[in-house]
Amino acid sequence: MANQYDYDVLYLGSGHGTFDGAIPLAHSGVKVGIIEEDMIGGTCPNYGCNAKITLDAPVALTREVERLQGVVEGQLSINWTKSEAHKQDVIKGLPGMIGGLLKDSGIDVIHGKGTFKDNHTVLVDGQPKTAEKIVISTGLRPHRLDIPGTELAHDSRAFMSLTKLPKQIAIIGSGYISMEFATIANAAGADVAVLMHGDRALRNFYHPYVAQVVKDLEKRGVKFVKNAGVSSFKKSGDQVEVHYGDDHALTVDWILDATGRMPNVEKIGLDEIGVKYNRHGIEVNDYLQTSVDNIYASGDVIDKAQPKLTPTAIFESTYLSKRFSGQSNDPINYPVIPSVVFTSPRIAKAGLSVEDGKEKGYQIETNYLPDDWYRQVDNETMGDNSLVFDKQHHLVGVTEVSEQAENVINTLLPAIEFKFGPAELGRLVYLFPSIGSSAWAQL
Image 1 (cartoon, helix red, strand yellow):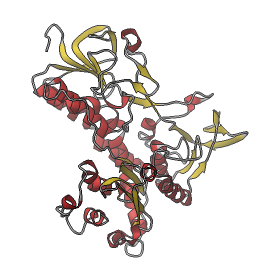
Image 2: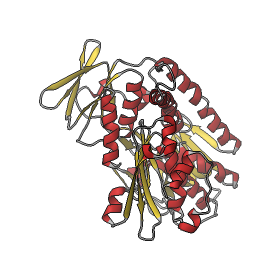
Image 3: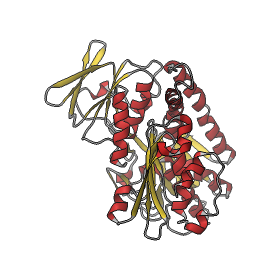
Image 4: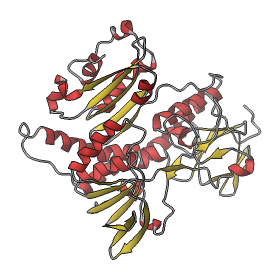
């Protein structure tokens, strides 16, 4: 690569859209720099996936004890303050660990806000850093409602940093973050109300399975308000009022604005250098190349059909690593990317959706999971999955709602990705007894 620049490849952002690929790229002899204005590792390790799953673990445990009452004596309760402290213990070393890997790989980490000066130059607090190729991996940030009193609401990062759980919580929105945090807060003892924009939660998941999760949360005391039309937040003593609908008000201790996430494309100089973007993110071609040919994008900041999830960002980052190191000149070829909502029970899916399978006239096999002997081991009383088979009886999609949905999807994923037929399926022997052997038996 050219040596008239400070770096061969310079990344804006240090999340999974960067570091998973930047490390092997640096080991291949490419000179790499990373600009980061916040925590090393980005959202996922610091205030996203890793933090969330740590807070979820006690919820999953209490649910299992609940199902096994009579076999197990006594109820469990979640100590929120200690759960939050445990979460912090789990994640606090991650930025240092990731930063250490970057340093050991010979990567320069430059702390500060990066703004494009031209297509080869990024200013970091006024100081120019130049590169032959630049990768924009600035990720997403929480959306904030544009209504009076919006400053009285909080985002997901603030929720996961609460050392004391508020008694009454209003959650605005009904996507991933809303449903997961409603589950966690309710299980930890908060009174939770979810104010929905429309009439369906988790629109990207199979509605009958979402309905099961919503119904279970309602039984546990979570209130769902459809088509809420939230109009303002107002201070009311030590509490806050959520105004919605024609003339309704809900008084709570704390508000979570979970109305989505937005790409970080503003105020980094994209307009000045001609990088095209829209409200969904940066526009790229099949090589993750932007409208400026030496500038690429990776991770959640991209406008793409694939789910904006950590595994997608990792795949894109490693793809660019291979491209920049000369290992491949092929366009990106995305694999099947699964997704999961960590409610309790979980909802997970991979491949073709049930709805799309029906449209194609494919075979849909639905299983009521508590009928499976293995699910009876811990008294699962709710759960279904739908398997989508093409006309040659290849498994092309699966959606499941259950306590172990994410593990089932991981088990079945290779069959979807590699289009296993009967011969290949017959060669796979899973550990027994296990959820993997139980899931495979359905095929």
